[in-house]
Amino acid sequence: MDRYTFIAEIVKAITSMIAAFALPAALIISVWLFKEKLGMLLLMFRVRHKDWEASFRWDNADSGPSRTVIPAHCGQHSGDCGQFLMGV
Image (cartoon, rainbow, N blue to C red; front, top):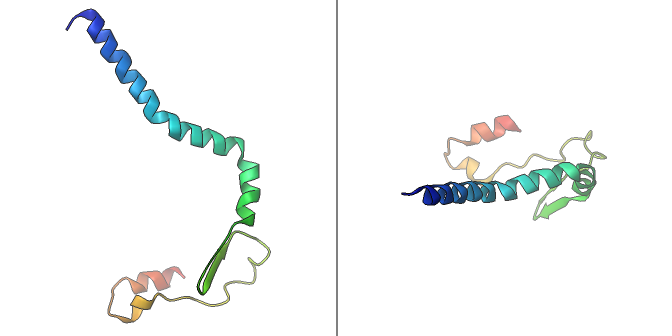
């Protein structure tokens, strides 16, 4: 391997490392730049599915959950239900 090939391989490796970190760095920078606006958007975010709802609003935060939802598999001799119920 001559000197020019070695330099070309080093430059190729550096550019591939920069390309690998470009998207995560752009996401982190954009979240940091728009954190106030993203916070306001997050407050408007609400998910509803069948019999449960999740939101990031603080107006109902002190009232607590309206009911506790237990997964359907907890009555079927599974060992992980105790861990779920302890986290509730």
